[in-house]
Length: 220
Image (cartoon, rainbow, N blue to C red; front, side, top):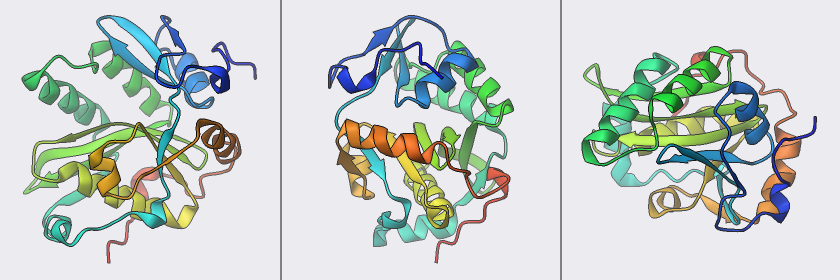
């Protein structure tokens, strides 16, 4: 199916390839399946496909010794309460600074969750939500969108748990843009054209599981 977006292979490396439009499910599916993601700013949606692209091969996730106590003490749940989690991301970010996760984003990704695309990895400590991440699954690609930590290392625990759960299904995790947090856990940069080639293959393969929420990670 032809995309409404410009071909990302010819897009600027560090600038948006398009702006405007909306976050309807049809547009979001078009974007993600073509290696493009939204980044709303000040009421305008900017669409990005950076070069290089940060990704994880789940089987190569790094579990630092310093993180093992948190892996033991925290409890991770998949798709336990997606709507509550994305609202948690919004409100916790608003405490510190303006956030791109506005009500439009919340409503749009809740709709994507209802359609079976968007998923949450929620981290709890003593039954209190303290962080996690959310993203979207297309075939064997997990497109990471946002991570949050209120409790120490909660987002790292979420990412490690996600990687361990997906490792036996030959997934790739799209982490979008490299930072020290991702590099610490084993993310690597690949060229955009390589990412787009992987995406074309992986997004058209069956995930290998029925329900994301029923995956049981092995953190041993």
